[in-house]
Image (cartoon, rainbow, N blue to C red; front, side, top):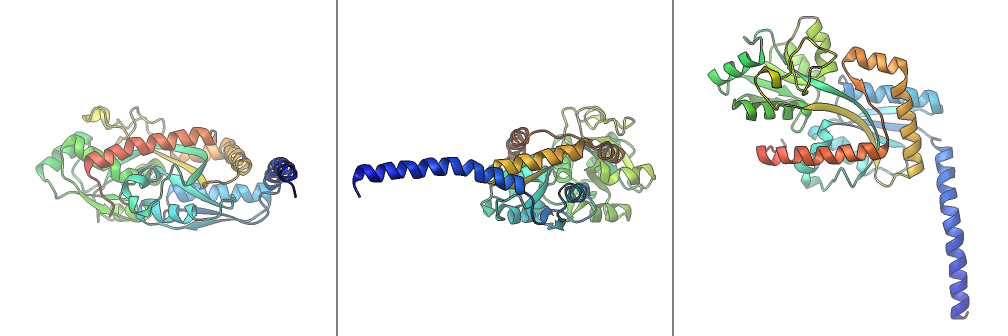
Length: 328
């Protein structure tokens, strides 16, 4: 075969492939999903991460007629579940519920060799909520100022719960400690449900936690709320002052939730998943359910969520380095 003929055939094959590739992608998205979808929640059952995963699973099944299965894979501040999903096939059938700790993986779990900006395809930003600073009724503090004074009087004797190193409740307290120059002992748990259980039992005294995880106990009078972590008062608890206005100026932390897939998931499948998640978030019953739990539904494009994640990685990576926070 002559050189010219080989080049002509090569050009023909390249043209055919260029035409066929988008068609194959379009057909793949049109047929998606044609088997069960797995939604990995990297925390134990009981917290809002789990609630979000089960809500999406239920709605996916209604829309597409395929089973959607939630698997809880807790541990290492969500890094265990994240690593599992990062190594899963890039076909849209394995998704990960992500939250605040996702932005800490690069800085706290570098040994895993995982990069949240490189190894995942953002699907949608789903929700955000303040953390609330709560204490067991036995803790003699009714305000943030009183808690700071108590911690300074008794350094190293008060303790606080978290859902693990790098969680929003852990970083909320570490930032609080740094800004108030207090010494409060960290007691990590694998999820919000066991942390709140021990707080209610008085095994630990203090906790920053996502609004939906502690609001029922606050309303029932079982926990005492001192303040919210956002820069402005929350519409869910307008009676509660912010930590910033309570004597810690500049203090701010926001908890958030979303969905990602493994990197290189076809763009058409990402778009289809994004459209479905945004549909679910816009449902009146979803908004009511979130509102009652103290969570604001967000939504948006995959590109918006990718930018948000990059910002979280940069912001909290600096906090981790400056505070010398280390993974357990």
